[in-house]
Image (cartoon, rainbow, N blue to C red):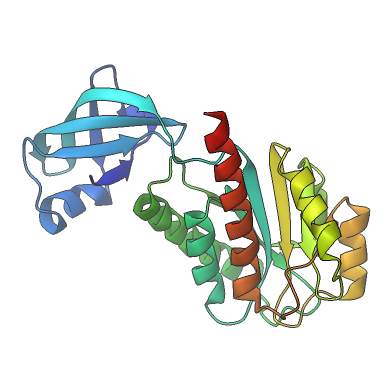
Length: 251
């Protein structure tokens, strides 16, 4: 069933309406008409099963059949602090991070980041990245559109990470797998987890130490050196599987 995000102010007791670019998509791409079934979500944890009542030039009118809690969100908030990579790699990272359950992606300037963006360019990029996050959220059936934060310094990222319950930093010079397993077990008990991922050249040692001073725990991703676009997705996959497994056991 096709799924769309709709602002809560466009959802009423038994009806709802879709406006904006999605109207054209429904009419001219999906070629849906009166009587078609679609799903909408308010981005706040509720899904609505709807029937199309009518299609006007600038809106789609819906009747709500039933509503239910979103079942696709992880019970743990995961924030990915991703160092700015080269070219358009961040677009792929954002897309896949959203699919894997991240609640927020924060682009981070680090000492070894090659990409340099002034405030104007950074905001323009962020808007594009947010659009990619929204598209990925729709495709993967998310109940929220994860936020892509503004580009921040490494110090600012550490400050944000301190607001989370747990934080980890995969580091190639750390190879204690048994300690990593213990750390992963501990953080899964929390309500929020931050993940630091470095750029192509990795973090400088001083940055790792700064993150650890802010509360981040070092972990290993194995004996191989992973690319920046692989490392975050690897740790997110591990966390998603374990969280989903544990959560399924509680339901």
